[in-house]
Length: 440
Image 1 (cartoon, helix red, strand yellow):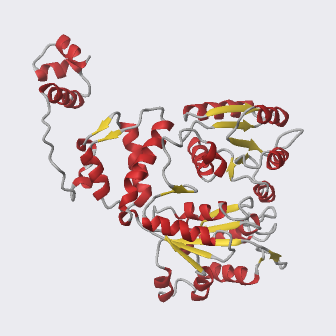
Image 2 (cartoon, rainbow, N blue to C red; image 1 turned 90 degrees about the vertical axis):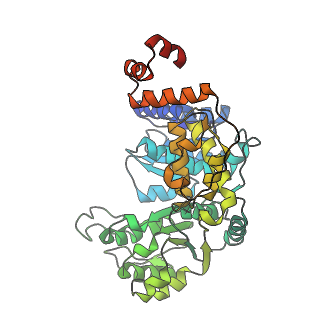
Image 3 (cartoon, rainbow, N blue to C red; image 1 turned 60 degrees about the vertical axis):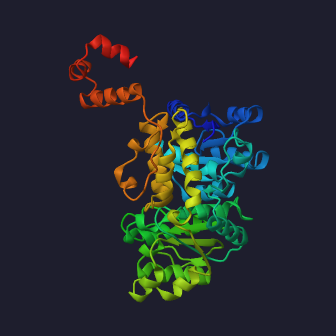
C-alpha cells in the first residue's frame, strides 16, 4: 500500500498518540488533531488521503466534520470511530459518505484492515496514489486479475452495479465475495449511501433476527434500549448478507417478507418501517442442495437469485497468480518497510502450478508470511514441501560455487545450534575468529 497521509481527529490526546504511533509503524504519514477546527485547518492546507474521526467530541461533533468534508472534499474517504455505538448516528454518517465504522476499543489489526479496505475501494485514492506507473495491476475496485474469467466478472459488475435487483454471489471460501459486493456498491449510482456488511455465520441464531431488524426496549431480556437493525442502517444503500446459508428457516421467512414488502418490523413492535435498499447475498455452499434438504426456502432463493455472480476459484485463473503474488509482495513489503522479495524461476513455477485450495486468501496469507520471514531472493528451499509435491521443477545448469555452498552450510549449522557460535565453530572444526570472519 502507498504511504498515505491520514488525519486522525479525537478529543483524547492519549488515543491520538497511540494511533499516531500505530499508523507511523505501518509506513503511513499521520496527522492528528484533538478538535474539529484544527482538523479543518489541516484539511484546507495539507493533502490528506484519508480522514479518521471520532463522532462524540465537545463543541463541534465529528458528524459536523464529516458533513463539512462531504460538501467541500467529497472524494476524501472517511472512517468513523466511536466508543458509544449508536445505529442512528451510524446511519447519518454513512449517508454522508463514511465508508467504515470502528467501535472503540479496537485493535491495531482492526484499524489496519479498515484502512486497507477503504483505500482499496476509494476511486480518488487509486488515482492519486504514487508509483502507479511502477506498479499498477489491473483491478476493479480492489479486485485484481486480468484473466478472461475476471474480465467477464468485471463486465457483469459494470452492467449490474446501479440496478437495485437482488444479487447472489457464489464462490469458494477465500475468493473475495465481500470485495465483489463492495465493488458493485462503490461503483454504483448510490456509492455515497451506506454499505453494511453482515456475516450471518458469525451471529448466534437467537440474536440474528434482532441484529437484522432491530428491537424495541423491553421486547426481550437485555433489550434495555430501542435499537435499529442492519436493514435500517443500510436504508438507501446496500445490505450485504454473507454466509446466507447459515440463517434459520424462521429468519429466512422474515427476510422474504422484508424483500417482498420492502418493510421491516422490529422485535416487540407492531409498526412496520418502510425501507429502500439493494440486497446482495453470498454463499460458499450450494443453496439448491440445501433446498432439497429442507434447510433453505426455495421462494427466498429465487428472490435472492435475480442476478447471479460466480467468482472463479484461483486454480481456474492461473494467469492471475503471478499478478497477485506481485501485488501482495508489494503491499506487505511496503507495510513492513522492506525491499520487495525476488523469486527464483522455479519458485514462480510452483506458485503457478499449486492448486491454492484456500484461493486468494491462502495466497495472500502465504506471501505475507514469507515477506515477514525472509529477505532478498526466495529459493525453492524456502517453499513448503506440500506446495512442491506435484510440481516438476526444471533443473538448472548453473552450479553453486564453493563459497555459496559454504555459506548455506554455515547457516544450517548456526540454525541447528540456535546461533551458538562456539558450538557452531566446534562442529565446523574452525576457531571462533575464523567463523566471525566468514560471518562478516
